[in-house]
Length: 304
Length: 293
Image 1 (cartoon, each protein chain N blue to C red):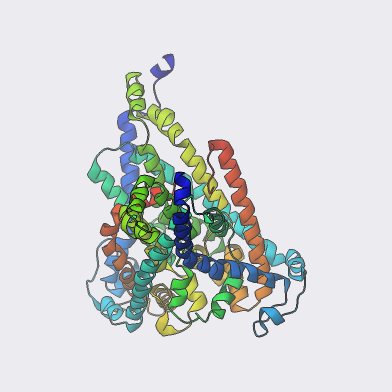
Image 2: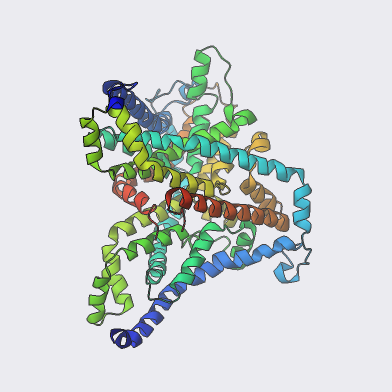
């Protein structure tokens, strides 16, 4: 009865709701679905002057070329290695920071530490790279320490062998504090009575951390790890590009930077779109897998 | 019970001491580059080149700052970035709220399918080349609009906002409907005022994203006078670096190092000034990011 009464009102409401959703829908079509449909140029010899409709179709030509192209394996390897570096070395520190913060009650001290460690997240990669240039440059603090201990100064940013460490270090600097927030929040939700009874049983702080805090945030840890795994292919253009120099291209060139350089600057649109599609597909598979894995391990998905 | 009697490898005092040293050290490490750049920017080039400046200026002078503050390029870049950030954030919030609201309604028959599209876009990344060609075809090249239009919506933020809207009790809406309110009134009079904290956090995310845009202006903006701060900053930093070798041993007031430092500080000041005001929304924002609908 009530439902029937409401029906005309809901019809009107639905019309309003559709109008509200319209700007967002149009945006999705313009900036997501049309580019996605435009990915079909990976199967064309796209020429910018002819446009999409007049460019000739060539089937899988670019994909075949890609898999025979030595540079493709190089950038694939670079993307993988940098991804593994990032995942392995940036993941633990936020958890450690949060575990440590959790042991302090003094509000002023906590406030100071939080203020300091969140700031870098708000700096662009251009600024972070500027910091790195100064710290690791000829007159930077690192070389000063080196020369004080009798070693030759090194311009670290110009050497291949340091590239991955520098990018990983810069990522740790920029994002560790920010990433700790989620674990700090998870710890705030732990039932205090757990600690009370542990104390009565005579557990000291170390034991409380190992047997209460860590198990209680394990679910959050797994979800965050899966989230990072899902983002493996999308490592961020800026983060790499700001450090890339001709000397470090050999190890630093990843899918994003390659597509930018060869696609935009050299105008090889179809080939780089094929690479982009490959990257998106692998990314999609990773997200689906990590979501499944997360659901199996914690009962909760990462994205849906 | 036996188990608890075994001594832990670390006593409470020792543990707290280690934590205190580590956390304090890490916090200071995070601040060090900023303090060092600040000291460097007020130092004499000669000392900066020798690597003598650590925490405090040496050979105090404001020559580097005079040059940086006199740089029309930097001010124009800052102006472009401020325009994009303020205008973009406001528009993004309106777009996201309007989009997230219908998606939060279970009675809205299209909600599920549209939500699926949003999540799909979130996990399937569009290849950058056709995206670039599309924006080019919309005649957005060489306009600040190219930066705003492409970032009006961030899928994740829409998902967060929808989750937040869903937590608002339905009774509030039902009461409003009884009094004859339409959906527009409900969104703007009831939902948005109740979502101030979420709006502030999302606004912060959008603003930081606009402020730090780097790849997009490289893609879409070739005109020098429209380039935002990050691009100008990058160009100035690279060119200062290239001049590095020549003036290394000359005793001058400025050096590439001091100029670089002043430029970097110039670009970070707005963030540091805004920081205390936005700080209280971080934790909430990061928390919101973790809730799914």
